[in-house]
Length: 82
Image (cartoon, rainbow, N blue to C red; front, side, top):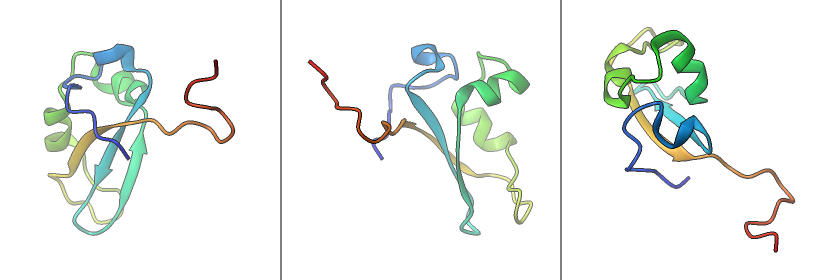
């Protein structure tokens, strides 16, 4: 997946076209839509602050790795349709 270093807040790029890629040292990982986190924490939340607040659902550890990645396109949808 392509990382998006220009994304710093959940509200960047309107919260569309990208996902939060969350990893725990135990091996658990997830892709979370920014809107899901914004419903709980607000659109002005920094992604760096999320890494400190989130807790792994498998082992309960804190301090997860969080980064913004480009959302994968659905199969069969061309990159440039025209």
